[in-house]
Length: 170
Image (cartoon, rainbow, N blue to C red; front, side, top):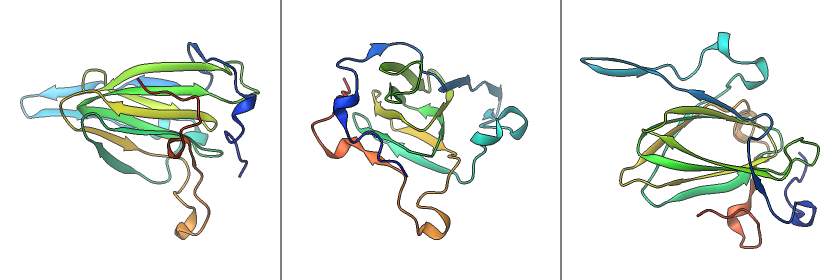
């Protein structure tokens, strides 16, 4: 696994706002009736092979709490932001070979804007609960956490563990 993100001197002095190459947003339309709603999180026939999930988990983030920023060298995350709270999603493209290197993107996701967001390797990401309710995030990544049998190094560079990074959450 490459040690991406460790040398902040190679990053641009300032990130510019805009779309990021390889990041996919997909509206999660709900099928609603008198019983409630149903949302399809993913379908094999709508997902490229390189993004096919190999595990799934759900997390709850409490109001005012942030997760990240971190990035992966090999893993793509397939986040489904469904609510009940809203989160501000932050993305920074730190891939030097990317045509969108140096861009950042902020988007409100969750109950008010149900989205799937596919985040490729090398895109630093974080989210913060900006609502008064807990927010749930389902992730269906294309790699196993810590590999088969949880015996491999974790593919995660945790920028949140230091103060000397340029990835600021507002």
